[in-house]
Amino acid sequence: MSTPSTGGNARRDFYERIGGLSMAPLWEQLHQLVPPQPKPGYVAAHWDYAQVRPFLMESGSLITAKEAVRRVLILENPSLRGTACVTPTLYAGLQLILPGEVAPSHRHTQSALRFIVEGRGAYTAVDGERTLMHEGDFVITPSWTWHDHGNDSSGPMVWLDGLDIPMVALFNAGFAENGADDAQAVIAPSGTADARFASGLLPVDWRPGGQTSPIFNYPYSRTREALRGLERAGPPDPCHGWKLRYVNPATGGAPIATMGTFMQLLPKGFETAPYRSTDGTVFSVVEGEGETRIGDVTVRWRPRDHFVVPSWTTVVHRPSSEAVLFSFSDRPVQERLDLWREQRLVDA
Ligand code: 1HN
Image (cartoon, rainbow, N blue to C red):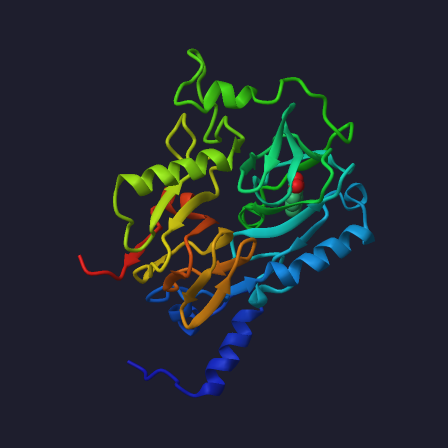
């Protein structure tokens, strides 16, 4: 048996020669390709709405919603600048629509969620039905559905957009097209989807066509009432407080196949037990103030602030008043792929 040549030069020379055939040695990368545990290549970050809002409003004087198509300031992870990603699998942005504006109709295979941050009374139309949006509402525009937004109210509307753009890009499965008209024709009165699907009942002969929820606005009034009910029903979970996931009533799954959405209530003075999970998560603060420790970073938050928690990074929430947090992540995808894991660092 001959002794392998350990000289760096011999190996480097070898790497160069196989490089010419588009090959590379696995042994130089094995450990980073298969890490013993997730090592997210992105960081915790916080967007203070008091700092963000003036720029959002300034964008309103720079470009119209129609010209921009979507007037959005992307929340880009500081470690992923230039990629439009808030995590490696998720896109997030804050969208502004001013009174009288229309964001024209289009559709794409990327799914979108809206979480309403400021204002009331603008609408989103999804496949011919409009819904008026209010703060705290969670609205979906599922994959390949026609959607446009309009603001017939007297004030600006701001919402958080969450999209699965990086996931769709990874699969090279993106398609998009523009509508014939800016505002699509209304074919169902507002409230139709809610009436048909949002009462624990389904139209008798209706069958789900896929994973997407037939409900497209989950109003805050109902979500808040559910949290109040949970609070009365029993003690908070040590890691989550009282936490609910939004659900497609026809399947029990997430309303959008690619993104899970959650709302949690934390009582004043509570400190959550340390927790981590493999789904990097974007939070939007709805009510209350407090701070969250994310690994060794602490962010102080108020209503309308946003922050991102990387995968497998330990989180502790410390609300100084009663608080309500909305969040979204790629958890349904990880669950479908049998990849999702969590760790509750709490005494049994
Ligand atoms: C989009 O269609 C919307 O419909 C928002 O409001 C943000 C970001 C990238 C691609 C499409 C919307 C988007 C988007």
